[in-house]
Length: 400
Image (cartoon, rainbow, N blue to C red; front, top):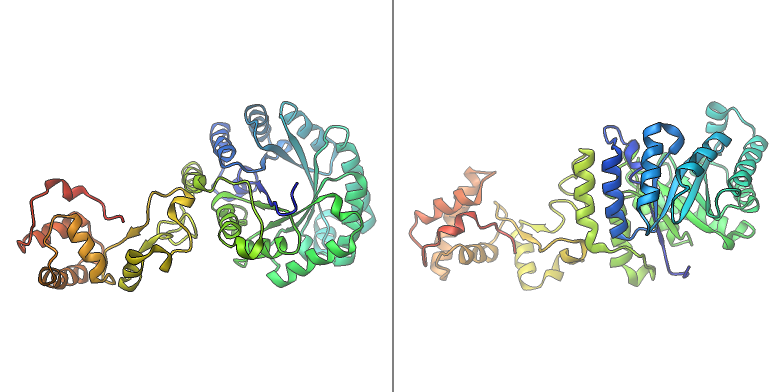
């Protein structure tokens, strides 16, 4: 793997599905997995085979059907889980077991009731057993961001010695901030023996709204796998959003100097599919794939975009799979976008006409905060400034 390559580990079908109300059946999971394959993600975490017969079936079906990405299955550090995961992934062209065990004091005391030595032994034994079935083994130190650095170093070295090929440092509860998380990754890169022999991964939750920022901070310190989900869905406030971290690396290549294998033109369609099958709407102002991501209503912005889209757009809509941006008519719109709209809809566009109709337009939008363009067009046609009659324009959308 090239040193400037960041692997994208998609966990929409596992951690994303754990988002309340987002459960998917086998058919839906396979449909999403097929689009993730087109998106060219490096790893698809298809589910948690030991958690239920349905999840086992989903992982098994995806493993036998999807041949591009590596297919991963989540597993506790327990023999039965490991065997179940191996069975589910037996037909995969490329498979990975993703083992996890909590390492923070609060998790060890209240959830596991295990000492540090017991945690180290349990993970070592699990990785050793997994090696009988898998060449590709990922180990996650659950709640790593609340684990002492000294113990996290021991955990990391034990995982590597046992045979892990990927070491994941999760911010399981979204506790980290970028400077803190970057320092953790830097410490491990500097202090853990043989760490350059494995891929260092990060998995960030969004409880403080910092999942993408933390992931990028970690990448800046040498992490080379990011675990994420489409639309950022997942437990509680969700996960690092795949589309956001990918487009940050893509757009700011000048800063990061890094690349992914993702076909960014499939991002919007992936977002729409995941929203449809989970029933979780994408917020209107969501970065990259939200309805407003490439839409402009303010007159100053519209004028700039008409002159040169780069004045207010740092990405091209085509790069994420959208046909074009949108100049939306509203109370904040200016004459430049309004003139363009008039021209598209068959009105005269002389300066006097634009000035006259613009005044009527402002009155209309003040009285109708939410309006259909067809209604606006009918209203303005009554002013008799048509250049020609175009009945088809009643259904023409405003999109430039």
